[in-house]
Each structure stands twice: as structure tokens, then as C-alpha cells.
Length: 398
Image 1 (cartoon, rainbow, N blue to C red):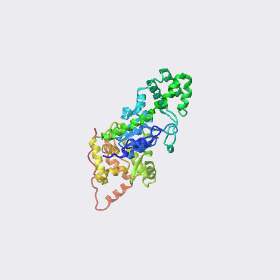
Image 2: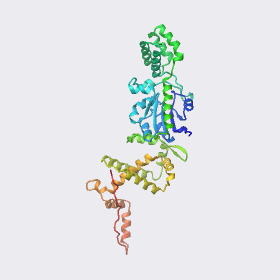
Image 3: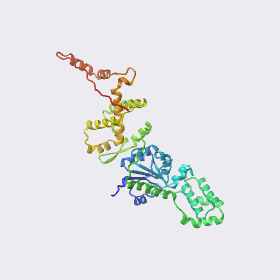
Image 4: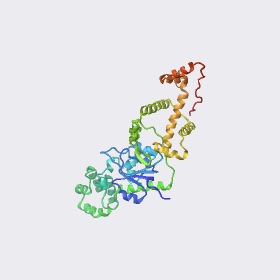
């Protein structure tokens, strides 16, 4: 079966040309990852993400929270070569898969400085072409030269030390050799010059290829999605994702931030926001008290919610996508609804001397002017009061 290119999303830059990646495996290639890019890539509904290159210094780097969100959504995440290797080491305990020698060096403590993979590169117009040499490539060639008998251990150490002392934006092979020549004998320098043209190897490129191959092999395998552990990100992370995310509507990608801005102009914006805030505060308090609802209660709430909206089963996936949701997101919201229902139907037991259903009904009716309306109707000749009816049945908890 032919695979869709967007089943595998790859973040690439100077480590490997995009055309080479596409020829090697079916994939969608995106530029080096910035903060928010992985969140936005989830709108493509990939089965796997391969993070190779990412920005730093001038722009915020890809956030750990984004990669964790991808794992939580059931997207396999692979990393190697550059920024991908760094994030894979940090997030391996959470399910991110590290690939390649550079990842192994960071994992095993052979190297620890993020600057080991840093380099200066051209812009998108020039294909992110590397302009300087990353220190990991120097280490790799020093090892290869030792294995080939070109460098002795001392000369290899001098090569790495000299390269480390050069700022990454100025580190070229010409500059490295110029400065290491005073540490090498004439014979060593001659041997290096003779070996270098054929012995030179780009470790970051090799690791990028290995990362693509590993991610592509996983997609081909048809293995079930590795769903990561559910987390409760901070309010900062939640808001950042809300404003930077991307969804689909009418067959087109739409920025979530723009949708929020449009909703803020809606006539009912204040009412919508306050209803959401009330639920969030109520549910947050409930969780802080250790209250939970069971899976059966959540599923019942979800089915009741779908029934209320009258969305047929065949349309539900599309409805969710257009509303910026997926199954996991809907389940979380229905868990909140079920927890809110538990609190409301058990209000008198939630606090010492807690409020009754009748008290709540009366206070809200008075605020809205409905109390007088009901009282006037009941005071009319020939009318008598009906017994107050209230909902029954509590939502159980685990």
C-alpha cells in the first residue's frame, strides 16, 4: 500500500538536504523546528515525527512540551543528528526514540555541551547549506583518522581541542588545520592532507539519514501508536499551545490564535469565557480535593454530549477536527463535564453545610428576575403551586 508523505513529518535544515530526504523515504519536510512548530505539525495528523534540525539563539527552540504533546497524541517521535539528538536524550524516559552516534554520545556522557552540534548555515533560499563545521564532526573525523593510522592519540586530542576553542560560527576545516598545524609534526600534517579528501565524513548527515530510516521503518511496520502518558501542563504551556496551534476547517489549515481572536469579538464572548472559567475553577478545586470520576461516567457523558448535538457517527471525526479537537481532547473535556456534574449533584456534601439544589435554583432565579415571573404566575386566580422537581442520580466516582 502506498504511504502518504504526511504520515512522516521531518524537521530538516543543514544536516541533510530536503530533496535527498524525500528521495530516500516518503515524508513531508519542514524547516528547522522553532518553538510551536511541532504543535502546528500535529494538524497534518502524522503517524511519526523525525526531529533532526532546530533553531536556537536567535529564535526560541522547539519546546519539550510540544514533543510530549505529540507523544500523548499517539505520534511516534524520533530524534537524531542535531537538536533532535539533544531532545531525544532529554525525553527518552517519556518515549522519544533517539537514533545515531551523536545521540549515543550525549546519552552516555561522552559530550554534554549543546554547542557540540552548533554550526552556522545559510537561509531557506539557499537550502540551509552548512557554512561551518560542528564539533561533533571534528570528533568523528579524529576517531576515523586514529582508526586509519593517520593520527596518533595525542594528535587526535589536539585536533579536537583546537576545534573546540574556535567559535562555532568561525569553525571551518581551513581554520582548524591552520591552528592545529603548530601542534602536529610535518609528517602528521602531510598524512592528514593526503587522507582528508577521501576520509572526510559528515556525522550529522549520517545520523540524519539513520533517523529518517528508523522513523520510516516504524511507519511501514504499521505498529500501533505509542501513546505517551497523560500530563497536566502549566497554564503558560496551555495558553501558548492554544495561541500557536493550527487546525483544519473547510479543508484548510487555520491558526488557532486567529480563531480565538475572532471569538473574542463574538457577542457571547464574555458569557462563553465565564462559563469556561467557572467550570475550570470548579473542576480544578475538585481535583485538588482528590475527587475523580470513573471511565464509565466519562463515556456516558461523552455519549450524552454527542446525542445532544445530534452529530451522526460518520461525521464525528470531521466535527472534532473542525472544532480543534481529537478523541483524547474530547475525552478530557467530558471528564471535566462529568466531574462538574458530580460536584453539582452532590453540592450539599461538598462543603460543610453545603448549598442545596433548591437554594441554588432560587438564588439564580432571583438574579435573573425569574422569581417574580414564577411568583406572579402562581398568584393568578385559579393557580396553585406545583411541587418543586429536582434532578436525581449522582455520578459515581472511583
